[in-house]
Amino acid sequence: MPDLMPLRVRLICLIAVVLAVSLAVEVTIVSFNASRSVQTEMSSALEVGVQIIKSTLARLPESTDWRRDLKELVAAFKGNRHLRVSLTAGGAMTVEPSLEASHFGAAPPWFAKLIGVAPLSTRLPVAIAGQAYGSIVIEADPRNEVLEVWNGLGDSLLTLILFFGLSILLIYYFIGRALQPLSRLAAALEQVGHGDYTIRMAGKPIAEVSRLQNSFNRMVSELAIMDDEKRRLNERLLTLQEEERGEIARDLHDEVSPFLFAVNADLAAIARLADQGHGGEIAGQIRSTMDAISHMQRQIRNLLFRLRSGVLDDFGLSPAIMSVVEFWQRRRPETRLDVRLPPDGASFGPLVDTAVYRIVQEALSNAIRHGDPAEITVTVEQSPAGASGPGSVTVKVTNDGAGVDNSAGFGFGLAGMQERVHALGGRLVLARQPGLGLSVTATLPIPARRTGACANLLAGTT
Image (cartoon, rainbow, N blue to C red; front, top):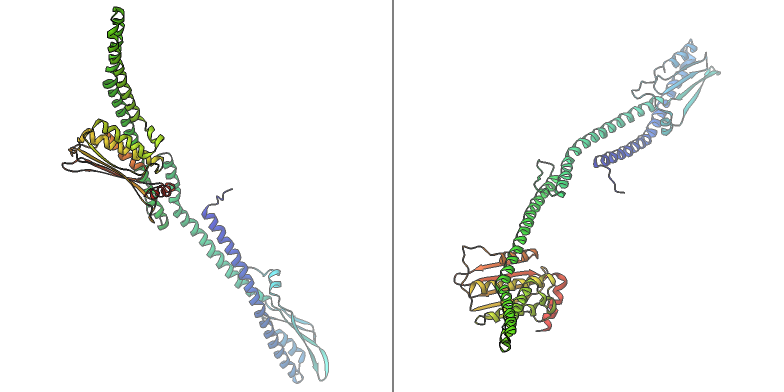
């Protein structure tokens, strides 16, 4: 199950953990240091109290009322923070240390136990003229010291809690504001997923989100361009299909339909001659019919040749290109065709082979139909793979024809050639030269899995 905890909650939980650890460390350090300091303070207070009492007891034999002096001595410890003094001589009397007020309340028993101050007490006998009259007991009372440590710890813990509380509030607020663009980005991505490429993100977020925002805007702009290009290609494809269908319809009308009419007329003439008994003339009519049928067969083969490159599938790239060259050579024997192709069997992959074949087919058709050239050169050669990437195949068709009118744009055939090369990630250069025909140069990348096989085949033929 994916972790869907919000970032703010994660940070707050992390701060809470740090706070708990900090509190535990603070309590541990304070209790460790306080245990020694309180023990030292109690020992010092007890020692000072013992010295005071011993000094007073040494002067009692000279006193005229030693009982009164003992009570005054014990009463003098009233208000002491650390000592409890009890008198058993000349009348029982106990002076308790005064407890200080605390804004955090009394220290809990567990805290006093955590500090762990050992109890300290001393008993001093009272003797006058060698006769014992009781004793004075001095006890160290650490409650005020423990309370002081408790108050100090409370102040420290309160400071920590306030600090972390303020940090949590600031994180909640600023992280929330910093993450607002991400919420807008999620909504924008959802719109992009629905095909809306007009949306753009605005505002001035933090630097990290700003880079993401700029990248998103660039991505959407490129997607919009690609979407427009896709629509344009689809429109061009439909236009090319209609153009091709129109050409096929014209060819059928101009080349096939008249001969069908001629065949029909010949068959009618044969029937008439047969009815009239002119059997000797029937042979001539049959030959005329066969000539018409042969002409229609050639025209239909030409149409099939244009519609499907079956020779490419059956015999490979180089034989397929040679069949196109021979097709035009038969129709234009006065035009010299210079062809340089890879060896038979070389292949650059189905898509690249088809693109190369169609480029040569269209370039030859364009040169012969519009340029009236005396010489056409067709070159297909491979560039080997290098450190920069896989190899490529370059197709170049040049002619010395009359050229093309520079004021006219490229026709549908050349536009389709451009789109075919662009779809394969290649580059097409169409150069019009004054007094010369159109030079077509296409460079297509070869898929990596095909480069090695083609290179080995070409190397084996040299």
